Each structure stands twice: as structure tokens, then as C-alpha cells.
Length: 262
Length: 262
Image (cartoon, rainbow over all chains, first blue to last red; front, top):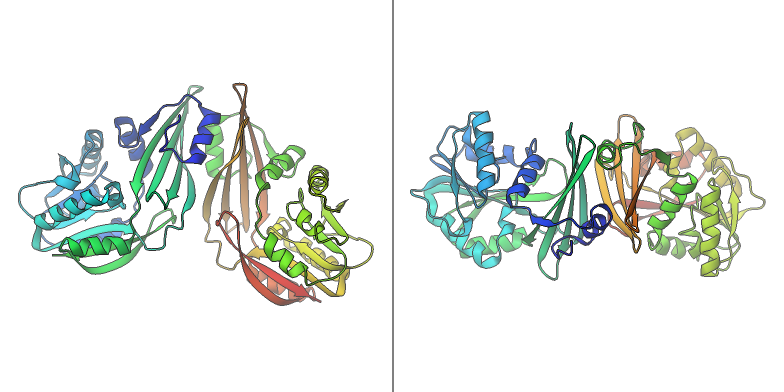
């Protein structure tokens, strides 16, 4: 329970609800399942990505695809779609989603900061601000790999928090997942501007047949805003051709989607 | 548990944590105590109110004073300060606060939409957007009573949500209250623009000697923004002389403070 990655409010809440709970990584096997349930029905960024994606040609690569919330939409474009993630469980969940949706997707287990896939891509996507999962040195190698895998007329779409969107402090969301058995998630985020990271704590509560289960997951991501990312893209030889704001489905944060070319 | 005033997310959370919990009004005796604990240390609006208050002369009246978060600051101005609230428990808590702070305050039990206090006041305060506790007909009688109790050069200070600040939807906060015994509050708000109200659900969780207690409180307030309030003030014969933005301590919402005269 004394996991330093928990937000201070979540640590206090856990001390009331389940003082002996063990904190698990959000990208663990079980964390992946909860993450998948949380993102079901979330269509943030889908429209924006498809609008740009339709203007591109050839194979599609999605980095940090997770359980395939966006991959499935990309797969429906009918082009070869490769989905890369570092969590085997996320890729299993993605295969299930893709099958149910009739989308053709090729899951690949790998590290987005050091990937090497045969051939080039007309569209590479790194959405949901997942670029913040990487510290600066790995962002650099990731962007180099993106550039190396981009077709001459290919587009790299990456989303990031708009500059100034993070004012610090905390943000909480209460997300009902399921009615029977009843399942709820409490998500709490806390920005530490000095340390340069943001902690995300996810509490999953479930009651079935009178028994309550409490699970808690944590993830620490790096702070990165549009201004800084633009500088890093430029260093990696990627040019921002267009940028547009994206609003998350729950209206909670403002993102920028950058459309980059070689 | 099927209290229709609970936000939908809070109802779901309760179904996991305490399916048989009884929902109590936030202005009940016990609700008053939790409200008091939640507002401890919150200094929202204090600076703005004192800045204007110092420019006025004579007796001070605070409407919907609650447990005295602002009253105590007003009482320190050294002028006769009358504090009106409809909850006896809130006024008890206020007396304790005032005593500890050495502020001279006169608590009065009453309904702010139909009050009658002897004499007139140089400053009347209705802060914390508590005007939204009243439906339109009672806002009208409250504003008439304010006008009747205002000295010729008196000032009425009232805070309200800035126009456009409510986009609908839900907002959640996770508030640690105390470390030992550990106490946490989860506050969830939900706006129903069609019905014209906002529901506030407060879940209070506490663990002491291994025993967890769960209490839940609800309050339904009316939607009212600055544009509408300005119209109602004008109808009641109160002129807005100045208006300035107020940011809550937790940065969560934008308020406007209106400085009104006869």
C-alpha cells in the first residue's frame, strides 16, 4: 500500500477501503483487463484519426495499441494493419476485439522505442498521449524508428497534451463499468511538475454475490506537452504538417493531434 | 439506496461499497458535520470578500453562513456580524469555530428567503454559490429581503457560476479529510440541464480500529448563472456596481462575485 506511485488521495482512499491491497502495474495482465474495460465505448480520437488515415495509402502501423480501441477502427479501412504493444495480455484482448468487429489486424509484441518491422507504412499512429509512457531518450529512438518505417509520402499521427493544459494538481473520475455484477473504477491523476511526471491510480471495485473485490493499479507517465514534442519531432527529422485540437469523449482534457511527415 | 438525488455514478459506487446505505440530506445534522470537515482549510472567496468588505461600514450579515468558513473571517473585521443559516447544527459548528478564532459572531436560525432582522446592514454576503439552494420564487423573496435590509450605502456581495462555466456532465473530487483516523470524502456532481438542477453526492468513508463506516449525503441545487442572476437582481431593484472572477481554492470551477447596491 505504500507504493510511491499512487496519488496521495488514492493512497488515503485505499487506507480506508483496503489497507492491505497490493498495488499492481496498470500494464500487468490484470491491469490490462481493467484498462480494456475502462476504454470500452470510448471513441476519443477515432474520428480525427480516420479522417487523416483515409487520405493516406498503404499499410498502417499503430504503436502502443493497447487492447485495440483505435486499431479496430483502423483495421476497418481494409488495409494491412499492424498493431504493436509491449503487453501480451493487451494483444490477446485486441485479437478478441478485432475478431468480433471483423477487422483484419496483425498483433505484434514489441517495444515501441526499439521496433523493427519489415517494410514501410503509409500511416503510423501513436494516440491516447501514449508517447508519455516513454522517457526522453526512448522517445528519441521511437521517433527515429517511426521515421525509418514511414513511406516517402507516409503520415505519422501523434497525440499529446496541448501546451498549458496541465496546470498541475489532481483530477479524479468515477467511471461505472458494469451493472451486473456491479463494477466501478475510480481513476485519480496527480501531476508533479517538479519531478516531471504524472501518476495515474486506478481503483477497481466489484461486487458479486455479496462479495466485494478491490484491486488497485498504478502507472507513472512523463510530462510532455505540444511545444516540447514539436522540438523533439524536428530533431528526429519529422515535420509537423498540420495540428488540430482533439477533445476526449468525457470532455476532461484537451489534446493536440499532430500530423507529421518526413 | 434508490434515492433519485444521487448522481448515477455515485449510485453505482454505493452499490459496490454499501448496497444498503441510507442517503441523508447534506444539510441534516450529520451532513452538516461532514460539510464542515470538507470546508476546513478552504479559503475560496475569503480574500475577495474581505477586500470589498473593508470598504463598507456598519453591521455585517451573512446569509447561508453554514459552519462559518467565511463568517469567521468577516467577524475578524471587528464589526457586529450576524450569521444566518437554516441548520441548527451548522450554527453550533459556527459558534465553535468563531470562539476558537476569537471572532464575534451572532448566529441566527432562519430561512434566507424570508428573513427579518432588526436594523440595516452595511454589508450583506451570500457566497459559495449558495443562492443556487433556492428555487426562483424564493430567490425573488430573498433578494427583496436583502434590499430591505441594506443600508443606503450598503453593499450586497453574491457569488454565482460564471455564464458558460457549466457545460453539463459530471465532476468528481477525492478529498482526504483526516489521516488518523483515516477519513476520505468522494464528492460527485452531475448537472441535468434539461431539469435545471445539479445533484451533489457526498460519500464519507472512515476507518477506525479496523472498522469502516460509510455515509452518503445528497443535495440538489438549482442551475443559475451570472446572466440570469443579473436579470433577477435588476428586477429586485439591486444594481450590479462591479463584478469580478473568483477561482475556487481547488481550481475546479469559475465563479463570479457580483457587488450590488440599491
